[in-house]
Image (cartoon, rainbow over all chains, first blue to last red; front, top):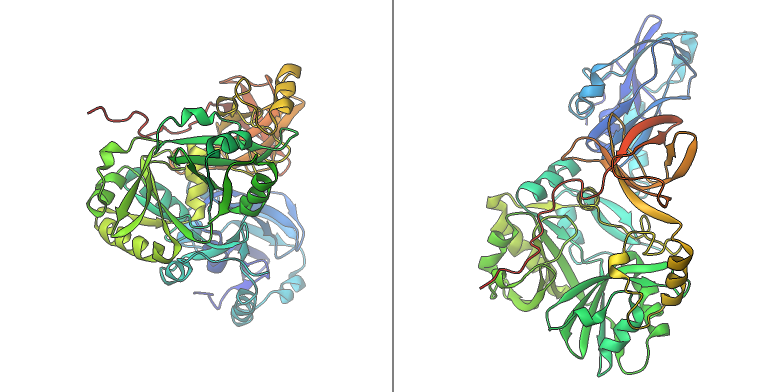
Length: 136
Length: 371
């Protein structure tokens, strides 16, 4: 599984591309694969304020809903409107085409808390060993 | 407690299935992906391991009367060996214990097929409420079950079996030898497609799975997990115990009045159900379809204007319609076919219209082929 080195990662399986005071956010290949076929994505409005660790939307597969968590405090500058019509790109190209939001960051120091690709890969390996999924 | 495994557990893992815990069982939720599997069943054929389902036998001179006391439907509808009825099983207060299939093997031998989550509860309930004159045996661990569903099911299965499948009408079964394995072959299913459910001894179910997959794979047969099993049954509008039916939902509320024969012989729960019918059935299950985006899910509130009418009991994105569909338990009479309603998702309202299921046309073979 691919975890690009130029990205940072959250424990909730979002990736963040940091470019100055702008951060682009999506979900990782691991998260997309865990979810299965993505059929719907619920994104915030441009101009919405986000808190680090707060939810900013949801991504849904046929079977499950998964909240999206903001890696950073800031303001939504842009959302990927094309995902509404083609949510399947979240499975097909999670790191490029399936970016979700661009956030203007309030405090760049918060970005220090995010994981590197190596740390995220280790985190995944660890959590995959714990128990199986639950079905209703 | 660790989950139970069907005999096919290793087969599923080897095939790359994603496994989940379901009703105390370690089961495949998907192989290639829910949408692909769903379409395979609608367009070609799919094979399901449903060995977790329960098989409870009722045998003895009084078997028919014993079964009648335990279920809401009329056992007298089983006029010949090889016929099957669908029914609810009710508590004395009218709440639902389970929904089941009852097979007449002979006038003195009947087979219940019950939901995996309810096997122990059902067997205890049957033993507690059964009148004298028949023996109840829970053979769930001794029997495996496969469901072969989809338009190509018959053409895939026919070369493997020693009975003419054209002679097996919807909701009937025959004893049969399937890929050399003796068992029961029923034309039933949970997908809204034509198809079969195959019952064989548990120690032969892997062999049967492999033979059917081998025969069907060149024709597009795919293994199907519980994920697609749920989306298929929901498009067909079928109830799922724990959602549309439960200990606190009666079959009358769940639109199963057609299998609840209040004027026939007595059964457990009949008096309570009669009273509910006389007093006015308070709730009903309705189907609905989203008119815009969004995916309804179990538990989401259903609104009409400012009034909350009930909650969603099952919802999904329909792989065939590519819109949200669902079933909801609402105040009876509050919604008619075509009425607008809203489903609340994460604090926002999503518009839908009431639509009587099935959401996609049913392709089950209802009428026996006339000779």
